[in-house]
Image 1: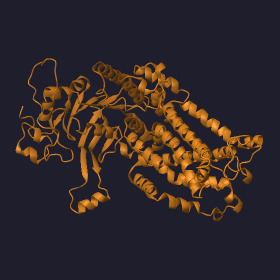
Image 2: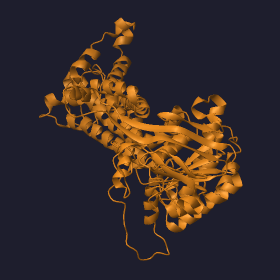
Image 3: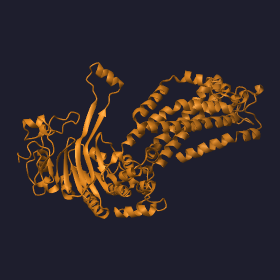
Image 4: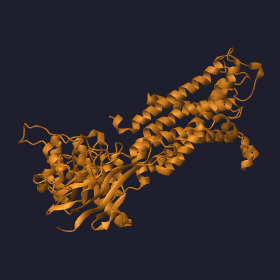
Length: 281
Length: 333
């Protein structure tokens, strides 16, 4: 299953990267509105038909994949990284360090998410020293989304890693390492991190799906990646206005999100087994 | 007797459960919560000479494992000092500190928890010596092979993971890991308690072979009196954090002074006594949160006199190389 999921994800990524190629080959456009050709059924050059302003759905799906996969993957990795570092430090050193870090975690968990995101998304990037052009680019929008979700998303991973670290810290092999003069940093890197890698990888891959969905929520609120840059989430939200006439418009991005999320989950399971020597028999 | 290799002086280890903010407020308001202190080890002193095997005996919860960890440097003592080769271990720094740390190694009870499940055997054994420069990265392979052979493991198994071994083999891996840093002193914390009887004998024999080969000194923590009698030169009996009796093995087993020691010996099963009435020590070991006043053993002692509940008895010399902490000093026997 894991291997099949890996293949599916690689195929999806390759397809997404081939979006400009497909656009040129098929002679259609994912950007330009064509109001004489709205909501066309599949057929001819439009493999999956057109959307409510006449843009090619297939090409938009591919471009949307670029954004959704890139945002999902980079956010999940960043979340996992921040969460792992904070969880390991809090769990291993305990005491005041643990208290401070965990109260910060609690504070972030207890913050009302949407108002916070709206405030963060409203930050004017030009005031931070970016040129107006750079601030309006879709790259800046993507980086902003990644940063916002990672900033509030690491808490789950941190708590998970901390709990595992707390129990590992009291295991005899960690005590033995201390008796053999290993420094705390070395114990964390050599003895604790490999043993939390299973749950860490699973939590990270599971969050890829959440991030893709979260990005669609933000896009719906107009705080995500700005149109006309397509994302799967944004396509899903646009489709709801015409859902009774052309359900296929919602079906395709929904299917892509579904397949991606499932594939990442299976991949996470497989990675956990691959990392655990006991499961490798 | 030569100068002691290891000496512990007035070592105490207390574990305190501090109150959090809510607890502090509750205790101010009169709720019956207070800080809880466990006196795991209470003012213990003894010394171990080079080459000696000292058995540390006591019931579960008497603090013998905690004392072992203090000696091995895993816990810091709350009070008192640990001297290794005449130097206070806590005061050492730099290379001397590292030397002392590596010289004292520990063998653990549970051979399943004491090995990192994500590391190959060669890394478990070779990690510390490479890190500390006892061998080079290039020489590590042959170094590990040599140590594995010494503890009776086939070096061809070194690419395997711990779960692919049996309990006895895993304990040998733990011993190999300790030996890899060239220790002088081994703390064996119930090191054979989790093994089958036939494997126990093998591992004990291994310990004794290694003692000769590497000139090792042991602190052998166990609740198994027959094993201690077999291998120890000297026995220290602990009860609820304190040493109650300490003497040469023969003295302890033939002429015990403390009632607790006698009771322990009476309970040990022996081959020459097949049928006998079993008289357990009455009651259970008291909570170390609230140890009894005076002698910790007096609530369970069949010979207790009023003095016993008033003052804690000090360790006094009964005969050469034999000390006991009992007000009766063997007069009940």
